[in-house]
Image 1 (cartoon, rainbow, N blue to C red):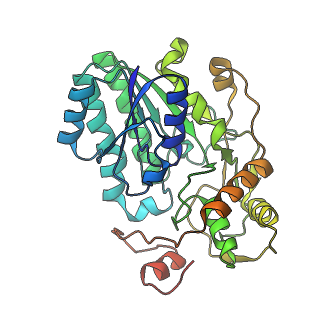
Image 2 (spheres, one colour; image 1 turned 180 degrees about the vertical axis):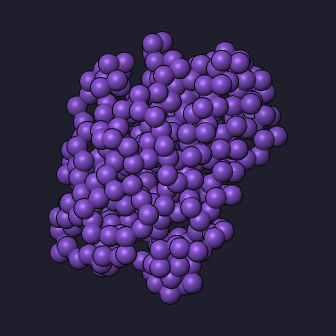
Length: 337
């Protein structure tokens, strides 16, 4: 197939592109490089620098290539920060997605694969299952769930098939460790290698099932080929939840440094979030998953080889009211956390 991967210079997108190339597909990759890196784009991808927000450019790309499948992974996935960047969040994560879907419908795309998030569930019962009623608690989760609903509506109106994945807390090589607001494992590794204390919001007892990239990307890449998976939603990721404190300990151990933590005031977030993956196993088969210790070891080796990154400040904050003080200090240039 000729396929499109959005966010191809980013973390998950670049790994999905690797899997698609290995399956023999012709891959066109789109990214605006606002959060990704050109070095992440796999050899063999026909790369186009473009934003999904530019609907005219998106339409021209679809007319040129007539993609059979689209793998939409471009997003700014900062749940906590999304409260303070609402316009940016919805433009990037919802309107940009709508631009892609419009062009897919107009140009005969068969299958639209969308990477959503378990942020759509909100503070629901645990573990989260696909049949639960979503109730997102932040603009990021709202934007993801809104597009999930729009995909269903587009299927019913136009017949375009879709597969939705809800991954969670994915980490690994090629992740942007320079982002101050998301990707806690990357933040911890970057801080530890620079001799800084690891920043934890609240008491660190909040739990997540941290997911190594190879437990996600092959499943996403195969989605259009699994006929029974069409027009279905799947949780995808690790099964075992860990506290943020445990993650901090594991990162420090992998790097061989003493554990040093700075506890910051708790921020508004879902305290416990992990999902059930029985449905994914039923449709895509059972895979041996990477343990937290093994995955963090792989990622720390990659970071040590690549080098640390100077954290980047997000410059498009729209509302500062009730923002965590540490983030306000970052914006004001008072701290390097």
